[in-house]
Length: 181
Image 1 (cartoon, one colour):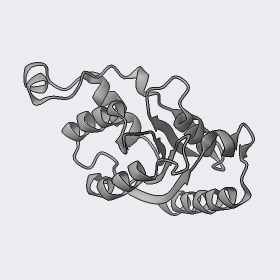
Image 2 (cartoon, helix red, strand yellow; image 1 turned 90 degrees about the vertical axis):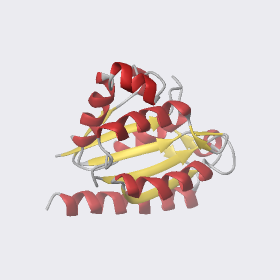
Image 3 (cartoon, one colour; image 1 turned 135 degrees about the vertical axis):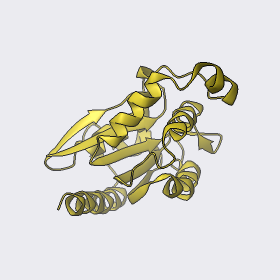
């Protein structure tokens, strides 16, 4: 059974990115899904002065340990002003202080969604450019535009978007199978 970690790059209690990440992870066959919530990790705003004085917070290690325990990662990023949400960037920065290759080359399904028509495309591009330098093995990607119109408890409503999603999911599952052989 594959261990999938699902989380959103958001701390919203009603995060649409968390909904998408959890939905996606639960579509993976023969998987145990663990959902991380950034609200469960008490991390002060990263700064070298804080790190020098107090060290790295235990919750940074706890988050990194969860990532390293995964056979696959499903991450859906919230976009704030065209970039990562501050809460995600903070977790990312703390983890990078522990391990520069923090994603550990684990197969990753990288996603973004938003209420708008671009579906978090800008943050997705930033992550696709940065994560490989940090051990990110992005094997599938998906952007869901207009979340409120295109997503429900049953999944992705738009047929074209659903087909694109299913193809990306298949690529992710294929990478998980190859990784476990």
